[in-house]
Image (tube, rainbow, N blue to C red; front, side, top):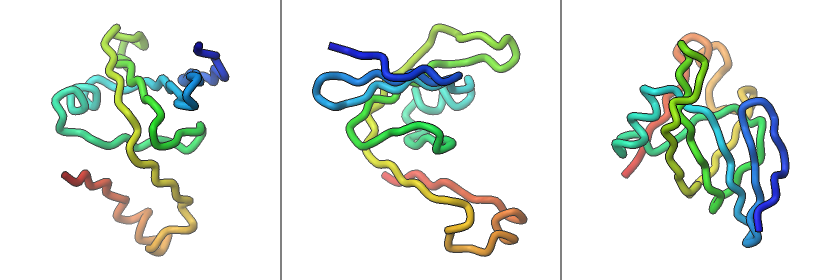
Length: 107
């Protein structure tokens, strides 16, 4: 049994009986290709939705030029969720604004 919990702009969240959520999100073509190839094993997202280890993230390719879905999608199991606030990071805010932040994928 699946129950639709919320639809907020770009995301839809379903809850499945075993307490695993299915979360749908848009992804641009260049990032979609990197996920499909196995090169990109992370997803950087605004913390505007609930997600936990064990949930299923459905990435649906979105073309920003045509503003339409391409019909390609991929399902990935969430294995780790790290959350942080910009004012609670290890580095001074000035350095973050000047240099940005890197996301490093490990294998």
